[in-house]
Each structure stands twice: as structure tokens, then as C-alpha cells.
Length: 432
Image 1 (cartoon, rainbow, N blue to C red):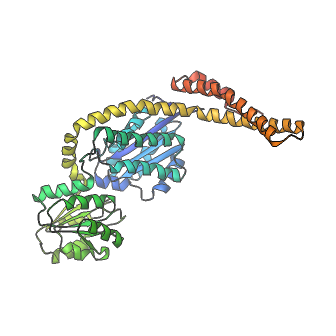
Image 2 (tube, rainbow, N blue to C red):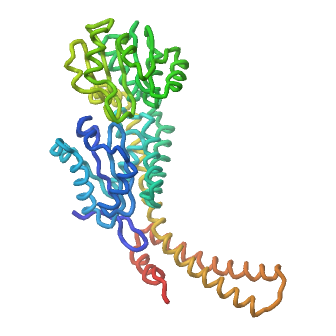
Image 3 (cartoon, one colour):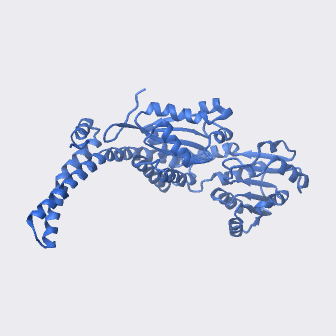
């Protein structure tokens, strides 16, 4: 298969996206593939796949690799194999779940992701910061470069525009508030219930705020940093529970919503068995685990009186939310269709900048060298005259480059490969 390419100054490049998401697979499968150390993963991916740039976007609902490479098909194959090798016992499921987008399709996909159209909860706001954080993390280890910077900058800008123009996020539910709705739908209502929220980060805060609008008996907040739990509990007229004494809070809870980023189980089978022996309402303890990775041991669902749910169980609420936002989704899609050519234009214009930059630097080097020779020949002249001469040479150089820059920019915008190739041939290598 031949894919359209994006031009760089010296060769054709491809923008590749390989991903597994909530649309094609389950939480346990994504957990098997998930990266604990994303920075190390970025370095490893660049080495293994031999890509120029890469970004890893990983949330509770998606693991996405974005890469810039010379050979799109080869990169797709290598990145897919890389994810499959991490799958453990889920090799077959991961193989079937992998989705691929290249070049224009990859660009459109990241715009949709940042706009909240690819989220389980359509319109949710968290993904916007997650997209930008993914780029910044890649940049911090030298994995992301100018091409993906342009792509992710535009994606965040489009994501903001979509929300401002369509209101797709107005009144939208989040993963956190969806968990509260799930509890409410399963129990009929939450009136008089005692709810424990484990985790006071971004998602935990959304959970707690959604709960605060219900007629609960009590909200308890537990967090590894107790001060953070105290602050959130105080804001919502709740109570902070000691993180190292979770059992005490669990004994008194009707519903538990867990949303931390701990890399291990916080609620083990052994712990919950002990809790249920003392539980004030032994017939019913609901636990909803929306953590990434999961923080509740799956086998506790076999304990009598315990009902365990996770992100996969939010699907019905997500579908209802999507139906309610159909009009906004259509408006958002139109905005993305408008913005996509602008992003492609930016990338094309950027493609000639390395030619111009290289040529200008070489000319500037010559200018300075010849300027010094001329000034030395003129002998003892004052600083004002030296500056006039220096400024004159710089202006001449700059004005000489204006038509070259403009013509190359137009060539890039018009996909005029012949002109770009000629520029590379004429200016791309320094002659000795």
C-alpha cells in the first residue's frame, strides 16, 4: 500500500500512529501493554523502531504511539510488534485491537483525540491536558522534535477551539462523574449512602465533586498525601480518611470509588475479606475501580456481598452521553475538517525551513568573515561607522533571502517537489 507523505527538507517522511484503545479492547488487555516508565519507553521506541521523533499518549482508555519516520509501513510493523510483545497472555487480543493511522489520517486522529471525540466520555476535558503532557514528556527526553511539536500544538489549539465553538464539554460528564452515575443507576439513588473516594487527584476530585451534588450521608476522601485528602474533603464538607487505615473507612462505606495511579493493588482480596467480616451492611459493598492501572484485585468480586465494577462497565453511560452530544459532535467534526488542511500547510511550510536556515547560517558565516577583512583593511575607524557597515551587510544578506524564502514557502504549500528537490540539490550540502 502506498501512503501520501509529508515532505521534509531532504526526504519524504511519514507521521505514524499505532494504538490500542477502549473501542477495541478491555481494561485488563490495556493494562498488560501499559508502560510504567514512559520516559524510558520513549527512548527504547526511538532505538527499536529507528524513528526520528515519537510521543507516547497513555491514559486509562488508550495507549497511542505517534512517530515520525522515513518508512511508514516499516514503522507500523515495528511499533505494532513492540506493543504485541508486551501483551503477555493477551497476544491475540492485542493483535486484533491494534489500529493504525498514517499521515493525513494520523493528523486527523490526534485532532479528534484532543477534541474529545475519541474519548469514552465524549467531550471530556481531561484528554486535552493529557495530550499536551504527553508531548512535553517526550520533549523532555529528546524524543519529540519540530514536526510533532507542530502537530501537538495544533491539536491542543483545535481541542480548545472545538470546546469553545461547540460547547461539547458543557455539562459533559467525566470518567469520574460517570462512575458516580453508574453507582446511582445500580442502586436506584445514593440518598443516605456513605461513599469513600480513594484518590484525590484530578479524577478523584471529579468523583468527589459529582458526589457532593447528591444527598449522601457522608463523603470520605482518602489519599496517600493526607493533606490533599483533607483539602478536598474540606471543600466538599466531607471527611478525610487515613490512607494507611483504609480498612476502617471501608467497613463503614456503602460505595467505594477508587481512582489513583498507584502501580499496585490497594484493595486486595485479603483486605476486603477482612472488611466484609466487620462491615455494617454485609449484604452490599459496591466498589468501582476507575484507576489506571486497576487498584482493586479482580478476585474480590467473588466475595459474598461485594459488587466490583471497572471502566469497562461505564460503556452504557458513555453511549448515552454520546447520543446527547450528537449535534456538538457534528459541529466539532466540521471544525476538524477545516483545521486539518491548516495543519498540513504548517507542516509543508516547516519542511523548507531547514533548507533556508542552513543556507542563511552559511551565508552569515561568510558575511562575518568578509566584514572583518574589510574593516581591517579600512584601518582605524570609529565604532559608529563600523556599525553602519555591519548593518548594511546584514540588510543586504537578509533582503537577498526574502525571495528565496518566499518561493520555497510557496513550493512547499503547492507540493512542488521539483522546486524543493532543486533547492536541496543547490543549497542542501555545504561545498568546500
